[in-house]
Amino acid sequence: MPRFFLCFLCALILLWNHPVFSVVELENASPEVIEENYQKALKSFEAGKYEESLNFIRHVIKSDMNHFKLRYLAAHNHWRQGHYEPAEIHFKRALSVKPEYAGIYVDLSLFYLDWRKYSEAQKIAEKGIRVLPDYDTKVPAKLYNVLARIALRRGQYHTALKWAEKSKSAFQDKKTRAKDQLEGVLLEARSHLGLKEYEQAEFAANWALSIRPEHVYTLNLLGFIYEIWAKTSTGKKREMLKEKSIEYYKKALQAKDIPTKFQNIIQKNLDRSENL
Image 1 (cartoon, rainbow, N blue to C red):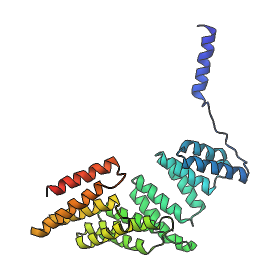
Image 2: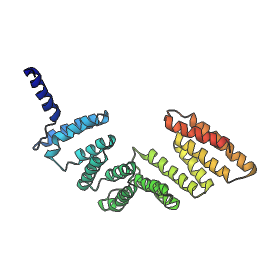
Image 3: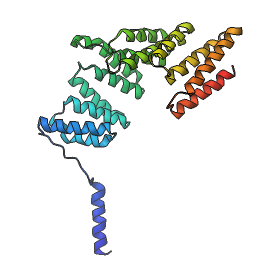
């Protein structure tokens, strides 16, 4: 075997076993250096460069293993990439560092919902509702919405309605107020629909539409409410409800920027309603 080829092969083996790029993990970085890297990590995260963001975090996190912002951002970076186990570790460490911060209960419960760990999501949301007042921190509406969503998924409509109603009177941050209100009212509509309380479901869905006009999800939900209601009715009322169902499904299909998958669902709903 030629000598140069042997050297080339050895180099390949070394490169295979050792990453070409590695992150230097500082153990005594100053607070200023930590903050500088956090800002870089945040900028990368906002640009969708999640692994780059994590590398900035890895560079300094050993200097402060209980740094809340680094842990919190690391959790979101892993979550965005579908790395649930490391995301959970970082979320839990962040929660242990700053248990008075309401946002961590919201994000961790939503994270567990995304991971389909509904019991864990429920535990975190309930814990937030229980402990946040002890820190003089307002309980956000989103935690009640999480519990309502879990109850709906389990077919516990009375429980879902209870949480949705609590959401409406809970604290709503200025930045998320409209979104939280909309979600709470939509959950209320879905709860009434599950209980076959069609007039209340219709009222709540129309309320949601007044919060955010032309919202594709609300338009589709109204179409579904009228469709289910029509199936339980007869005569002229059935025909009237069928027409309203078709009307709202068509409005939903005319909404802007509908994801293709959801567009197909609405179209199937429309086809089904037209064949009632």
